[in-house]
Length: 430
Image (tube, rainbow, N blue to C red; front, side, top):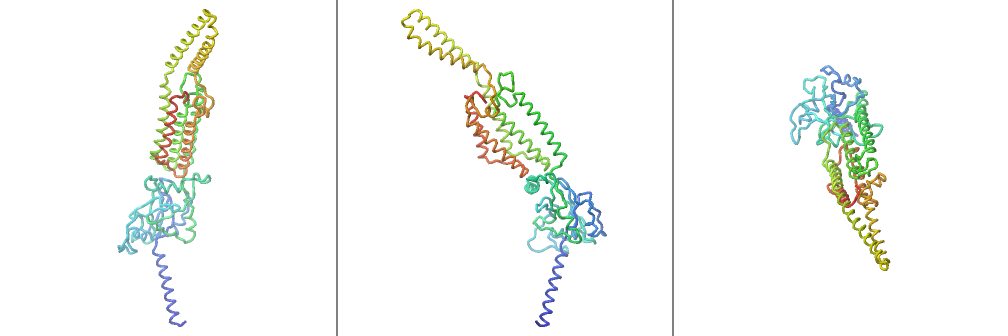
């Protein structure tokens, strides 16, 4: 290789090296992360190392509704890039859309900030250090899925807090590199812990919910809160009502889910249309069951049976008189009297059943039986309620949101409830 060719290769290599250095110097760099009102003061004399060495707040915990402060080296460059300006502040020609700065947690964009809000981005800032604030907010319409990926399906050891990697960039996905002087990169990786749920609030809410459940369980054991209404003096002996048990199931499931989501996201608008349909379906089934029970005219049934019994007793008495008067025909009347007495005995059993209040056999027998026989339509209603309940709990745990069930699935649940009410009309146990 000649001297000319060698000089040309060295010149090209030097040019590439210088261009790479210029490119690296032409980007902002993430220097430090702090909670608002706990960040170090920055002026024109503050150096990047001074900010990076202020580690008293690391590691720290940040959660929803907190404000995170990110320190940037050459913050002006990032602000210019967001506003489609070059390093010298001139407008970039071509296809370029202005955008906001973005905060990323484990790669999920969670907050934005306008480039005008970058502090220390002026050209007169000698140190080049600037900072930008990001408010972590939960918005159902904007970042619900990103928060679900971060906070949903918690592991047991990370139930209350989880370590996250925080980065700053632009909305289009550009990420600012981390300053690699000294140990700054180690302090920024996995040193911020994301608050999933506050321990104090979680314990207090769990105790309140457990207390309500304890009171409820005591009440259902000693009252007819979830049992059929009847004339029995002992409420605990009345049979369990499937409709009322279903209504209680959805009430506690939705209440607990609402409380769980609120403790994590602070969101109150989490009740979905499917949730309202399920609660309404449970309440409607219980109301329909109560109306059907109240519509049974037992007094009229008792009066009809008593009249029939009196007629049969009169027939038996007349047959006895005829037997005494005509001994020859007495043998023929014996069969008639025996048949009449059997019918009278059946009517007396029906009267006894009307007068005797229904009694509980066991929880599962009560909700699955119509009278003395197991009922498939009741079994179907129980199974579909359990299946939708499991899906409901899994969706809340994984996505921090109550599910939106398909209309067809809700219709199937409605058909089960309607079938239950339809079969209940002629039955005696609800």
